[in-house]
Length: 170
Image (tube, rainbow, N blue to C red):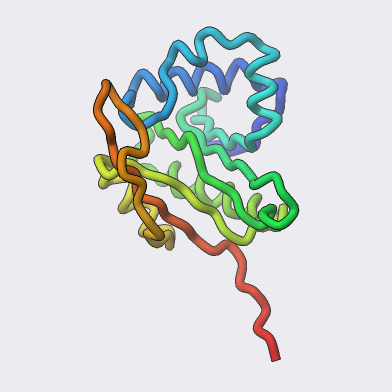
C-alpha cells in the first residue's frame, strides 16, 4: 500500500475515486456524482489547489481511498483545518488503510502548522463516528439538518482533534 499527497497532475485519479465514493455512499457526501462527472481538468485542478488530497493506492496501483484536508484561509485561523471527503473502498476496510491515511493527514497537518482538525460526520454513520473517536476526536457540537439527502434533513456531528501540544506558559 502506498499513500501520497496528490498533485495537480493526478487530477484524473482524484476525479475517478471521488465519483466512485459518491456512487458507493450517496448519503455520506454533500455532492452528487454529476457534480464531478461534469468537471473538466481545469475545474478539478482548481479544486485540488484548495484541498490537500491524500490517496491510498493498493499494490496494483489502484486508488482505494482518500481524505481531503482544507486549511482555514485567514491568518488568525490558519492553525485550523477541516477533514473532508473521506472515503475507503469497501474491499479495503478493516485492513488499516483508513488509519494509515489518517496518520498521513495528521503528519502533514503538523508539518504545515495546523493545530486543530475539525470534521462533520453524519449522525447516520456510527462506524465513521467510532473511527474518529478511536483516533482521538471529540464531539464539539451538532448541526441540525446539516445537509439534505434525498429531500431529507440529516444532522451532522461536529468533531475536533488537537494535532499539536501547545507549549505551557510559565
